Length: 449
Image 1 (cartoon, rainbow, N blue to C red):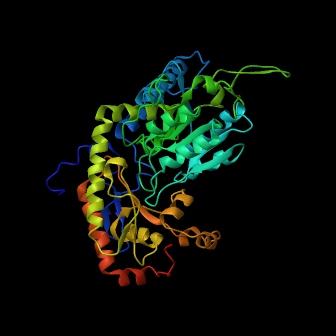
Image 2: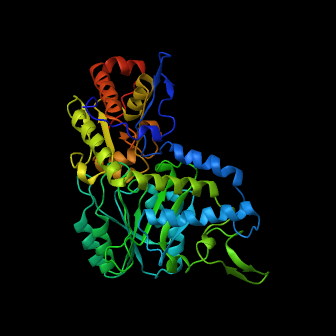
Image 3: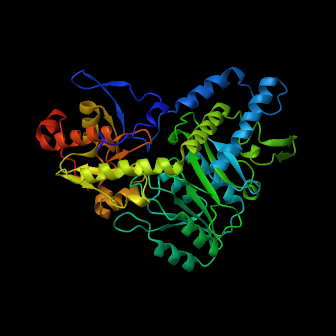
């Protein structure tokens, strides 16, 4: 297939794709990165924009020097660029800069805590990254929407819980796309349901926004998204920034979770008056270079067209999945044939090889970077692996390299069918020579749950 399709149109846009990596036999080979769900390499235009900007970098806000004025202008303009990329309602919403999605969700949890009712409920789901689970365990009554046997969200369970709590749900917080299976959630349908019961919705957009078209929609729309969080490092701008986007009114109802420079409009020994949001939520000197990087990345993605990127990545996912299914001993997880409703993530195992060992084999023997483990979503992984309560208890104190899990491959827009062919050949070679590779890597018979 790779010889008939031109799938290299994005490769010249990305840095580092031709870097050689060492194998165990000391040979050098062009590395393959199939770990894009964890982080992505930078766009060349992002690095170029940073280099152009660096001589003009200065402290922003309140500085009267030319460089400070220029830096401030670029920083504030970048908010609009990023907000418009996800279709925010500029009159009612704003962009708060943070380090990453994790900080964004923690920040929203702190903000919403200010105005919460004593009996308010947060509904998370059983497929969430820990970052969209753990922050809600403090200061909130938390319940989980279930997933089915294929790892898909149970919408009927969402309806049931909204009805049961009868107006007490303050927030439904859900991943736009799972970082384990790639499953997309029907976020606009969920938004309608949440709003019908007086709740707001947060979408963890870390895996969805870089790979598919996303639109928050106007405030007056029944299916609008109230809050979204995502990270630059997962969308080709790995320079330490992310965003929380949502309601100006909500963001102004609470003081900052971090206090200090930039968060205030007036201070005396007896009084503090907080600055308006977003300043009140961006304590200290902000990451101006990160904002330049992320705004450049989203402009390039907009130019390329998110639908085009989505279509290319789904083709890669379909090709890889269908060919993995043909290799003996390969186990795939989730609703893996439903390419339409997922982003480019594939979790799998090989019978008889622990996931951590397999990841090492792919890297050290074939120069292919993947990730293995539970991907910061242990309850979801336990469901996918059909772990019993006894099995879960057994693994509480297990070191990470021995815990059950899967290998995960995840594609970016720059990956190609040729790279997938190299990966498939590597998997086939490992399966056909399992004993040899297991002996080489001193395999210990850890159980795959």
